[in-house]
Length: 188
Image (tube, rainbow, N blue to C red):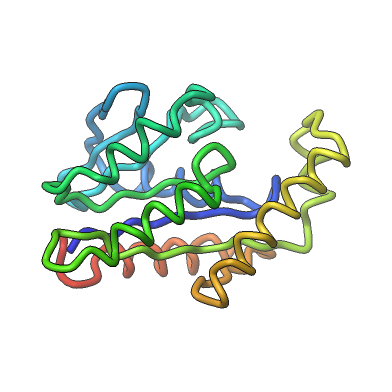
């Protein structure tokens, strides 16, 4: 059964940094496209990482996808022959509508479904990271994202995993947790 790995959290907790680790540890990556949904595919991991990632850009991932990507993402999840692990992070796809669709697909009897794993990244260093990366995200925007993530956590009723990202070595630990999840059920 393919794994769907959803990674969320407030801005500047290190979601993109964590996912970029896959691109430094594994090679080669091929381009993936399904309508407005873009990403990268690695055969060794049988993994599609959704979003647009480049080495030089700080703000990568699903934030680089079209604002109109949601219907294509839901249609992609509904493909009955989906045999790939799928990972995404970030505000564009980490939302209640997408997660509800994934949960709905998990409950279809006798169908090839997804095994949903939700991770919420947290850090005590977000204020410093906003300064370090010189972003222009307003307090109001950040507060809205925190509320959004908290609403998702409440909806999931503790059916998610917290990844603490306070220190540099936490990236390695969290990366290994994601890698173990991808390898779950021998789908690699």
